[in-house]
Image (tube, rainbow, N blue to C red):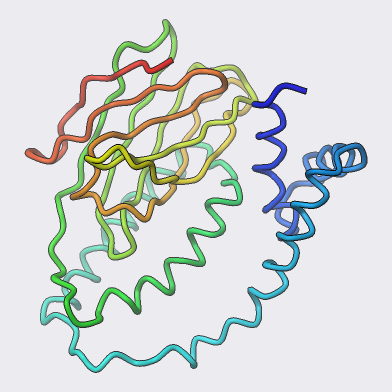
Length: 237
């Protein structure tokens, strides 16, 4: 088995442990587990984590003594309005099931919201940005909209023209070249694919956004100087 194929199976183990796979994919993972001791061992460790998630008690989170920023209410209202508008657009596209990275990111958001109002949080953030990937193969189109949040960066990905079933893994990199995963999704049935993911890296620190699509990697610079600009793409195959 190729290394990339084996990695793809591992990326599905988290959703398998959470019971969040459709029947056909769950059956495929179960069949793979029968012949792969390495994946069975990893699944056992993930099942332990999945079993602990329901035990998390928000009431035990220590309340911060600092007062939230004065404009927090207005910022939340603006964010709700933006989310509603984006969801309306998303109904016209086919949302994809996110991988285990998306499930963990969702759990991390709740904890990050409490951290966001601790002493020393400035509340400042960069504007949203639209990044277009250039230098792509003929017929392939990739673009992303990056938006700052208290938990890091929300990434709205749009992919078209890659082979059906291709696993797309999205990441951000900072100025020091450190990579921050934003989760993954699969391109299905040759249709245009749209997914919303998140990364712990703050948008103001992001320098590059990249997508591993099958055996190819495409990257584009994140321009911090101007909001809603298109970046020149980098094919890092």
